[in-house]
Image (cartoon, rainbow, N blue to C red; front, side, top):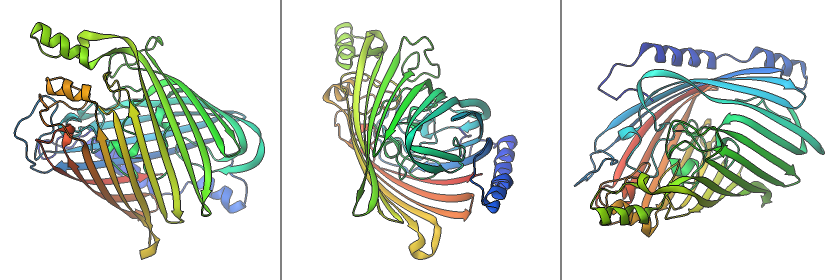
Length: 453
């Protein structure tokens, strides 16, 4: 999403926009402040929020005896920048409409290739040197109260201030991210605010429907009752795996279901989510692609064996507060191992866990420190496919004679600069990048500047 580090000029327009958002971030929202001062219940009719995130990331000169088309390169650095407006309005009782125009620029390391647990969630699969405008979200959310206590809702990006009943139905229709609704976690879900690694912010096996930027068109329904929530959704897949274009006719789609149970453990709140998906589209079997290549003497081509079929997956997500300033997250997932990954990343099993600690203990209440460990693996069929020269969404070193799980450790320290801006320093250690024990380990460092209002 930004230009290549050290090898390009940074467009003035993008940085001017970033500076403008930082200036706005320093200003309080006058209308909401007035309501609070008067002691009125905030019930917004409209809202304008914004954010800017800049990430500079670099990999060290790691051991790499060979490389393929989708390999991570030693000693590279890249930048990404995005600036977003969140424009919301109350359409009728219980209904909110949101649109979020965004300007993006830059690239992930090696154009977001080379590691299945990719080290930057701010790096999309589409990179450009110059700033470009897109609209990742445009949706309507309808909330229907079913009784129970009224609970306050704070004003935030994609959320109008007001109140909701404890028991309720919520319907979301339009263009948004599947992960806006499913597999959420307060400690590890937002690459603009917490961890950066893909397999920390979401279950790596959750091959959720999305275009190359991570968004789709669809509908989701949620039923909140007591300490339980049931969710279900249907979403467009892209036209072909990892494409910037969605299939608008519903011929290729994904069904997602989720069960959430909220609880208290030693008087501390927590919740557990179980998420399952079924992707229905034109996908290839990995073994078939290898067999065809061996029979014809040609290269492995997954596109040549694509047929209409399913890929299934399931994951579990734990969010647990340990103390008022300390939280734990954990995820585990499994997906079908003989079908090509369609949208997210090349992963058939994953386990991740980490801690998030606020800085109040050392008198830095606006700071946060986080640490996480991830273990990502693939099936024997995917190992065979990659060793034969097959390419996945993110990985493909041309061969894989010594497969091994990706082992990733990430640690970050976020410094609160103001109430609306922070600077984060991030370090990741990646063993066996792209499941290849012949390459790495890789050390990746990053600096992230984020502002919001």
